[in-house]
Amino acid sequence: MAIHNVRFGRDGGSLSSVAETTSRATAVATAPDAVGAMASVGELAAVNLSAVPLLSVRDLNVHFPITRGFILQQTVGHIRAVNGVSFHVNPGETLGVVGESGSGKTTVVRAVIQLQRPTSGSVVFQGDELVGASSEVLRGARRNMSMVFQDPYGSLNPRMRAGNIVGEPLRAHHVFESKNEYLERVAELFQMVGMHPGVASRYPHQFSGGQRQRIAIARALAANPQLVLLDEPVSALDVSIQAQVINLLEDLQDEHDLAYVFVAHDLSVVRHTAHRTAVMYLGKIVEIADGDEIYDNPLHPYTQALLSAAPMPDPVLERKRERIVLTGDIPSPANPPSGCVFRTRCPIAIDDCAEVVPQMRSTGSLTQRHEVACIRVEF
Ligand SMILES: Nc1ncnc2c1ncn2[C@@H]1O[C@H](COP(=O)(O)OP(=O)(O)OP(=O)(O)O)[C@@H](O)[C@H]1O
Ligand code: SF4
Ligand SMILES: [Mg+2]
Image 1 (tube, rainbow, N blue to C red):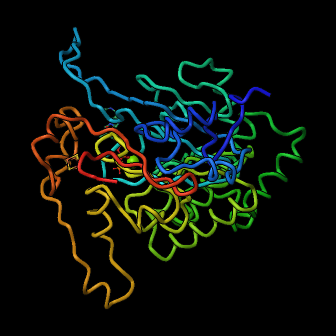
Image 2 (image 1 turned 30 degrees about the vertical axis):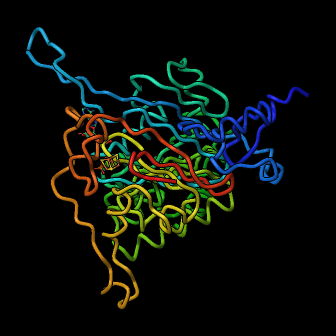
């Protein structure tokens, strides 16, 4: 067997040779398949060789044109909603994506499923390149990848009954042989999300926010996908209902071996669900790490500020909590700052930050990876 076909790690990067691996170990790690800086030959041996990413996103850009003029429209600039984003998702895992409003989270997931065509970059899902793909390839991909939209009130057609909404992907992908089979599957989907199938004849306005989100989740699971893009699935819900929906999502993941991209406003929502967490700022991922690493050892000043803003359940720790208050608003993605996009709000910015675009650098080990884009972080 040619050694370059060997896959390794949670991210399944290809291993060409130990020599190449060792040289990459010291390189700046912009790609998820780069080997962590502390990787050793011994560690490589301990890594699972079978994992291949389900989804691999490379250098994704989504730039919306800004136009002027009525009859003769002219492009006078671009909103850089997503700017050079790279990440991967392994089968059965949850990638949390966190960032302030306007950081580009929704645009990233919409570009992954190609509801928003990217300006450039690569989105490989189950081995197929989706950027520029034919409608046939996209149809196949959308059967195995689905999305729960940010707004549970706006994302369900108010004129459709809940049963028809949940069964929509079954009809779109023709994944049933008879009407009975279709109805049984719809009933099963309601049960999967903890709802009585008898509610199938009701309209969306007859449900609470939490129930609507369950219907949206049932619809997303209808065609048995492997990856579900969850765009702030609990942000619009009451806190008590949020926990129920998160528990439901976790149970469904375990039962059906689902992978999630879980978008949230704040780190506390994804802390206990995500296997890996990415922090976005102004269209870029500024930090990404496995497990609890990003919470226990945040390296980027923006992540540190986000974490310092999260209230602590322990009242003693809560009193001692030191908040890093970021001044100013998130800049316009139409006119991002030069160098590091965070520099206008960064408490530790230096002159170089206006000149140098910080690249993702990797620390940690193969089993506990941690990447950060800040020139002042020293490993
Ligand atoms: N269709 C569009 N045309 C022009 N600009 C857009 C479009 N969609 C999004 N944007 C801009 O792109 C940037 C990122 O938007 P996006 O909705 O992806 O952010 P977000 O992180 O999901 O925010 P939120 O937390 O509020 O949902 C914003 O400045 C937004 O105004
Ligand atoms: S590169 Fe500079 S401005 Fe950006 S986060 Fe690091 S210190 Fe702050
Ligand atoms: Mg959004």
